Length: 333
Image 1 (cartoon, rainbow, N blue to C red):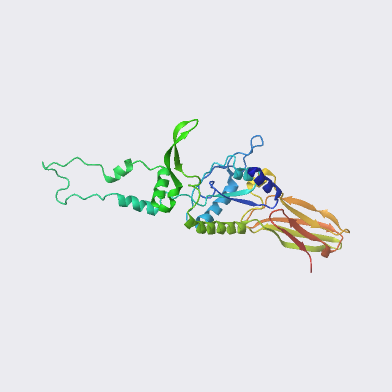
Image 2 (cartoon, helix red, strand yellow):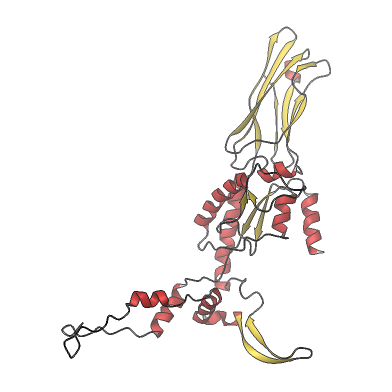
């Protein structure tokens, strides 16, 4: 029921342009699978992965997140069966997945405690180094660097446990193993990482993390596609012959539709429309047409019409979208 409710909400809102998800998945820090934007789906099923054109957008958003976040963390990049995958592949919505927090592996406090528990090595006397009692040089001992190289790398769970041990207020994240008599399986032990122990950030950091995510949300809002009309001209070329010119532009960072949106064909493009009075006749150009491919950062499409009859002041040009705003131009001079 919860998954269905999410899908029905997205389907009912035509004005959604981007989806921001907070959880265990990540599209901004960890390297994820990409596929060619020109690739065709097999049997109507999109190939798994982020289309390269959309990935270029996520890379730029990831740079912004790296500057905002005090601790950018990597997350799961296997999106099979997830809400993120459905929003992106089936609905064609650009999806930004962020993992706001994870137990740090290189926490300074944990390292300091490890160092405190180890004894420093003593240097050999200055005059006796390298010679034994018989005057022969001893066999060369393995260097400290080679010993460290042979030392096995701690697992991720071992690093998480080290962080928990170094923070007394976080000990509840791990439950000690305890014997338990199961009615069917018999004797066993229950314990380990507590439910949500690896997910919930410390209480002392929640305010900071909330502020960072909110800053990302504001940054994304400023990137959303917005259509406008510029360089519009309505002029009389000859008695009864009127020329109409206009350009539709998108000055925002994100395109009108991402690569997934153009592939899925589930989102309506921008509708370009010429408004005419009843006594005017369209000679050239389409009175209505759809625009799907409008890049961000200054993407521009130019249009031209020829009209016979009518008044210049009764002719207008408009652009409307479900998710990127609308604009209209009327000659007022």
